[in-house]
Length: 448
Image 1: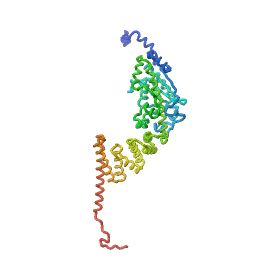
Image 2 (image 1 turned 30 degrees about the horizontal axis):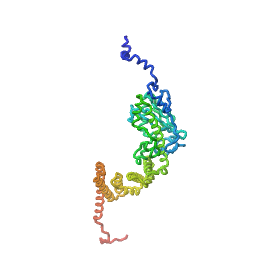
Image 3 (image 1 turned 180 degrees about the vertical axis):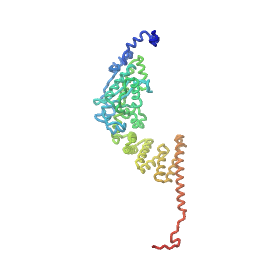
Image 4 (image 1 turned 60 degrees about the vertical axis):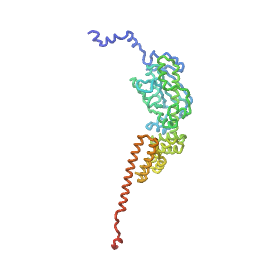
């Protein structure tokens, strides 16, 4: 048998460059690539970082401790579990231990996510000695990804409650994807994952018009991080470094990641302090309104109703005030307090979204609960008049106008039929002949 039959790929092997096999045989283990950018040593020197090594290779590590806390002191005991349940209803009580918390934020090669996006920097932080300890893992080259993922998994094994800001939608799904793509490193098991983006939006977006972390730091925590790199420039700065560019432009990215972690810790502390004692902590009317919405979503209706009432009594913007009254009326109706609900609806009617909803609820109340059909018809006619006025002024979208007009006209037709039937029955009762009594008929009646 000739050599070609013994090895069907002999011709393919012959096409390889002579040194190819030797190069493959002498290749460094993953994460120990000799192709790290030339500026890596200079970067480590500028930052005071260290090159660490684990079983999967090397990576750059930077640790820094911040003594001053943002948004409140570092916790010296367990968090209020009731406040945590408003964020994670199914969470176990052990997540209230702040020693189990690990803050996480990544810097990536793109914002689209997916398999082509690398988290080239993974920043984590935890409370320690009254301050915040920050650790950053940096990939000097793509081959160091495995070593970074192993290092992160080791830290999560120590603290399994993950804390992020938009991390449930971006950071953690991206990291899980990278773990799975290694086919050798399992994604770490989390005890809980708390994300503070949505609570922050609920509490402060109406007031600030934004829920960006930097805006929250400035206007909620009263802290300004100073000059900062623009997030959209971060991927290109990293790619320039990989191509041999200077390391200095990377330094602001390390700072940016540190500030994100500090801001996240401060926002988490602020949110939990509000939810733990909303009646005492919510001095701002919009903040009170936000806490009310969180309580309502989690079924704490009694507390939500009390806080909505307080926010309405405060100076809320008109649009938010209508939304608060609408929610308050809905809760009152759900609890069977119909007089309070009716009073709120009567004070809300108008050509706004909440005002039209109030007309509808009043019509339902008079038609089905109190059976005052003439009152219900009058409410619906007023609602149709409001719709005509809004349509003339152009303050309502054409599609919304058609929908609401059709609904109210259908309701009015049904109510008028009920009024006609009731009027007909009343007329029949009046017209029906009455049987004469004994005196009128001339008959004599005797007691037996």
